[in-house]
Image (cartoon, rainbow, N blue to C red; front, side):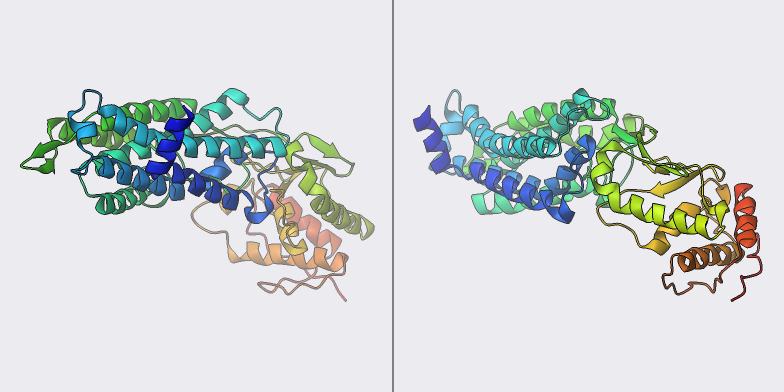
Length: 422
């Protein structure tokens, strides 16, 4: 077995795809200070960010190996031998399997470093999502092998590379193929927290099955030799047609979205007036942001601006902004980089519960002036400089309370009250 492995490593280009997969995964893994650590779903989707770079490498090297097997000097091994198809299969497997193993190990390592013991949604959906990603490695190796059987080694590599880049654009949820429904090649990853979302398991299962079946279809045909030259036979044309039909038709036939909303409230809470709650996955990042909120609340309390102090402040999640205009305010998303104080103030007081601020028609100019005035006021309470964006002015406690009351009932056209005197 060791001799066979050494032979394939020496003779094939495909195994080198694993080195590319490792390099891309490591580069993606350390971006932006590894903010995904601790979140199971985000970790898995984070490493999907680099798949579009790995796929063309796998396909190109697989195509080169298949083309080299089909040259006049070697084609007797795969075209006329009784089990010649195994040569193509082995070459494609060496392009896909080592790369898939590397990708899997990187994800598992990241999950371990992030101490993800009980991921939201459970391990089965995590395993299914990882399997869906790994199935793309096998599919692109099969695609490259299919292309390589009809072309010269250099041309096969170039065509497979270009085809893979194009398919990554139209069969995922990025670029030209951007859509929320079913995507045969899955998604292009996530660069923000995924709390509040989960995968659609039906989409994952269909993706795995479709890629597995079409990969087998692409691996089956062998080219014909006509007058000493390679030509596609009926099997080749049929395989291309079946695969194209499946990839084009399924996105329109599979219902639902690829990601599903799972509203969830943060459970790591501390303090009183207000109680500040974040998601347990973000406790390691939340310290500076929680301290800034406490500083704002203490300043508001000390100067009599009690209308700015809610009973509870919660971290937001996807598809869910925890604010009701009365006792609950939104903290926004907890990230490694803490927002500036002015941005934090806007997040805390922004009336996200009001339809008028999320409709296609923007709120009236009075709202933006009032919001800017609240920011000016609160920044003054903590003695920090702030250049008003639209001419806001510091308000009295009663003026701020009047605005807070108006926004509670979604009156976003309320004028900013009389400014506070110097």
